[in-house]
Amino acid sequence: MSSSSAAEFNARKSLKQDRYEQPDFYGIDDLLTEEHKLIRSSIRDFVKREISPYIEDWAQHAHFPYEMVKKFGDIGAFGPTIPTAYGGGGMDYISYGILMQEIERGDSGMRSTASVQGSLVMYPIYKFGSEEQRKKYLPKLASGEWLGCFGLTEPDHGSNPSGMVTNFKDMGDHYLLNGAKMWISNSPRADVAVVWAKNEAGRIHGLIVERGMPGFSTPETHGKWSLRASATGELVFDQVKVPKENLLPGKNGLGAPMMCLDSARYGIAWGAIGAAMDCYDSAKRYAIERIQFGKPIASFQLVQKKLAEMLTEITKAQLLNWRLGVLMNEGKATTPQISLAKRNNVHTALEIAREARQIHGGMGITGEYPIMRHMMNLESVVTYEGTHDIHLLILGNQITGIPAFF
Image (cartoon, rainbow, N blue to C red; front, side, top):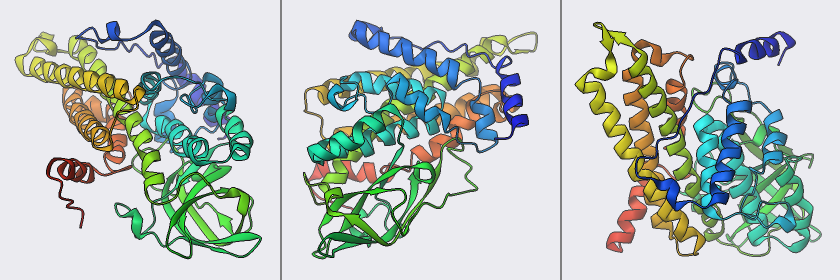
């Protein structure tokens, strides 16, 4: 960013006051521990200080603030459920959900940066990696010294990852990796990538690929109308020599990356409601302050209807997230249960963003309010890590016992 742009961002900081207050209509705070509340207070202050004053400018300029990577590491947003012995936070899953909720309340792109690092890079290295891999990579990823990305989606294989064509061959003293991945969050700036590829027998394995390996490149994706403050790109592998010690030994098959996605989807379920609550809070405040026909628009029945429906859906989602967090902590949460939460909560957040935009009227399309940015971001969130319809089919399979994916 140029010095003049940075000066403009700093000048606008004084104009952007984050007055957010979280709705808690059913007293869900009573279900949280004091540690949960302390974590929430800390990350909320961080978002109000480090994200809210700048996010509209970052989004308008499609600028990924790389300096946030180290700041996320300092605040403990990377790998919060990873044991402290490896640099993680050693927190429970409700704490993780709270972190994702507060960060996405600031911006979905910022939450994507954090959740990819924790759930899709650190989690598989911890869960499926060797002790040597854990010690080498996890502390640097946790601190934000290194940024990571997760390579599963391919140009021709999105909802059908089992059809991937990225592959590696055993060359004796190393593996030779070829193929490409796309729509990869963090890739343009990533130091390491956890990549899923097929061996010569067609079995899916995870490999750790490091920036600087010859033949490995990360072209950036431009022209996005969504997640504009995050870095998105491709992973291209052209005869990349990967050391054999970089293969994740703990698990292979498609179930391995799917376990990673379960962890990330859980975070999304919390995060999306953070965005929804920000839209609701902005809409409520605007309705009370905006005068038409000589009185606040909050006094009109149709506006009250919108606000009441928003609060109802947020409250339902909050309860859903809390219960799912308990199941995660107990090791009982299933993939269909996580799919239900991701699907419901992102859809709910999108509907709330659209209703909030109407309450804001024409002002709702400007960067003076967060609504349009949240709405555009959520159009990506409803698609990535399992589309809205794929999660529906996961539930349908659970209900009927009949897969309908093909």
